[in-house]
Length: 176
Image (cartoon, rainbow, N blue to C red; front, side):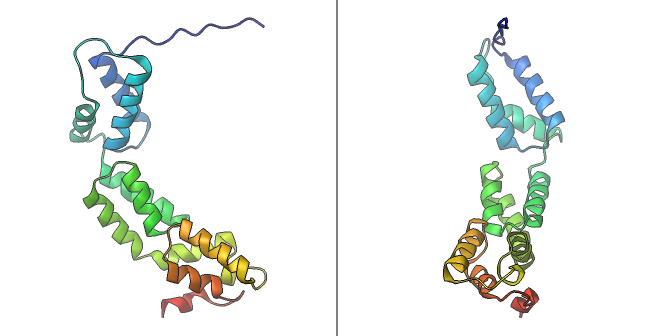
């Protein structure tokens, strides 16, 4: 089998970096922080020629042009995570990791926290915890279920309450 040689891409300049940024935002919904990280990775991988450019400035300009909306991206991401049954703590961590500022992260996390019981019930249903289990769990099983719910970002009290429920019980009773 013949070896195919790959030529390394040429070093970036300001216009090349801007083209990469534009291509990235047209392909993906993203945040300023994620775009900045992407551009910095590209500079490290390909090198740089010409006058220096700041990836953060390019990301800010893309946001000013309306190509990036951190708040809308965060709300969509948080909604998707909540539908998967993940808790507010896990959601806010993911939003911070994506580079959203503290104000946006807190506002979105508060909105998700209002639906924390629904998210916890969804997670319990998916993982067959408590009222959705096939059989009552023994203590080690309940502890594993509680740990899984904590990793998913749910509060300790809610995780314990759901894990302690017997199969077939109505989890809506926890709302009282």
